[in-house]
Length: 84
Image (tube, rainbow, N blue to C red; front, side, top):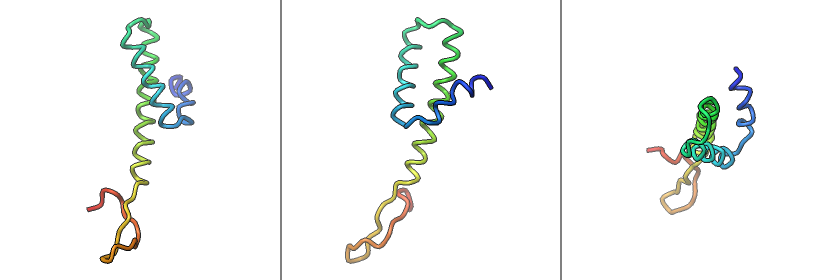
């Protein structure tokens, strides 16, 4: 539960903010200058950031629609972008 409390701020982040924070974590871990116990904590935060980004991206994809056109080329409505 402690990790959930530490990552509570993630819920309020935009996609761009969360992605930026995730990139900083990856950079820190790749440099290898972080003590092991802190590496574990920031890795867990990275996982939470990734999950948040995935949720926001999925929500955005669900909102994307394409315009349906009638035979004469006039807009008649919308449908999901990936509808077949």
